Image (cartoon, rainbow, N blue to C red; front, side):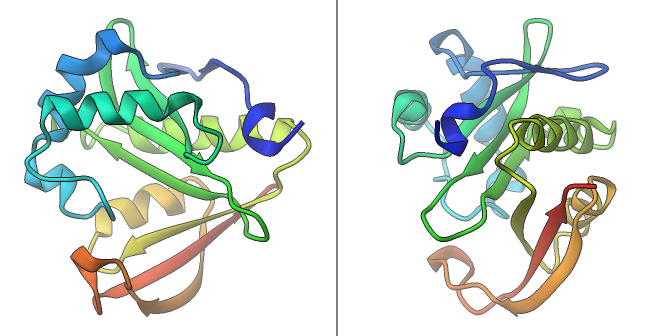
Amino acid sequence: MNQRDALPAVITSARLILRAPERADLDQLVALANNWKVIEPTAVMPFPYRPDDGLQFLETGNDPAAPRAYAITMGDILMGVVSLKFAAEKLPELGYWLGEPHWGQGYAPEAVSALLQAAHQTGQCDQVDARVLAFNSASIRVLEKSGFVLLERTRSVVERHRGKPLLVMRWTAP
């Protein structure tokens, strides 16, 4: 079984449930993601974020080449998305975003830590990388709280952020 498929369908933490994004999440997904403060630090999410973008994201759920994405939820409330991208000859890469109404309450590090723990428990994932723009101090704190350490300072190559300072951070299982 590959790393992506070895991950559990549902991951729980003290306050959150991480599960596959569903069609019923579309309205909340679009409402949260259609915010420049949320989208700007991401690598590829479009802005404005429209229902068609949400549907396209939801349709990638079973694509083995797409990141393994989890909806970050509390009850019926969608709060954001956390994912691991798997590529041959590379460590898995973490991605996440959280809707602005949920910022500053510890949800992002809780979701990230729950996903990392679940990935490690598969026996196939001892290290994960993450890329974060150097100006995104809140996301850097999320990664640090989740056990990531600075690996490299570089510059972004994605079009939206081309040339901007970028940090590559790495989590290693305890």
